[in-house]
Length: 417
Image 1: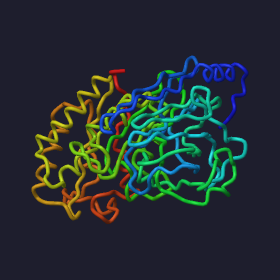
Image 2 (image 1 turned 135 degrees about the vertical axis):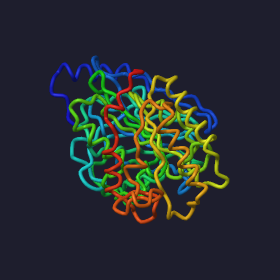
Image 3 (image 1 turned 120 degrees about the vertical axis):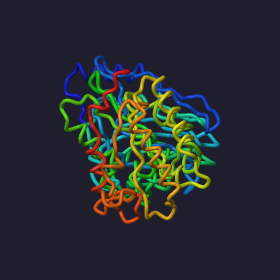
Image 4 (image 1 turned 90 degrees about the vertical axis):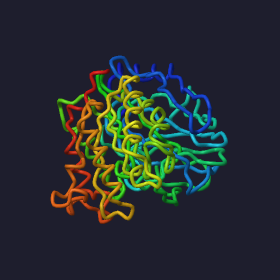
């Protein structure tokens, strides 16, 4: 991270740190925990915007473990100053105490760019305890973060137990130092274990130029990036972030990827349903103006499957709750998946009925037609072979890029805010 070069900027940033409140949200049952944004403690003339996020779930691959350090690699979208992180214990059954937290620029692997790794505080303290069902924001970190940077967020977990909260399918290699506090280390040497999940960290925000906003992509494994190339940031929301960064006319710069593999609109499964997690994963994120909703295929191919009317009713709830929060919703058509083992003619009929609603009802603020963008014109219930990763459900890297290119960037400017 670049240190401010002007005394005036440094003073503003240090003042923000002094008055910041690291808000620990009240605990509650995991299915009802609904964090709300903490106060936007940013420099004058700036606004708090999410630059990276990941949907949270209970991690089944490993329980919460004490006395270890996680070095989590995340890729920013919006640039800005006053970086803050949000730590989540939404699915925890016991409190988690973070002894120290640092943020710096990743050089390669688990190694950091020398001089960039800097300590984060929580209401002025280097440590914080997050109760089950809760979350906490750090104080703003003086300095700036460039868009499309690889950040390394290092978390020393002093005490933890029971279930761990995180994001399972990160498609990004992160690292663990299995013994002790190594959050301040620049070196990769202590980080001997590799992981492909993000633990505890569920959002990063920056103070961006006033008027800057963000988009949240609410979805399943397609939005999560399944079948895109690992460690290359080629999920369709990543390609969308590149387009937004390159567009001088767009004030939407932040992208929060809230896809969870296997997620459904109506029922819990891989992650809580979209209806349950909407507030926590989407509406609580700083600066979000618009949600792109790409969910439904897992509902449709489930057993028992909902009717089109039931799925549409779920969409309407998401629209109504988002509108009540001043957020627009772009409806994305459900993509073809014939060839996948759970495809059936009956499911295809539901998909077509649901897509007709998305395209023609006027319920959404805008529509992005991913279905038509990636389907095979000769077989409309199938992905175009050039976009098929091989499983007939998930697009490859080229398909992901095509999806991002299909989004009308103007549709992400929400007049409700």
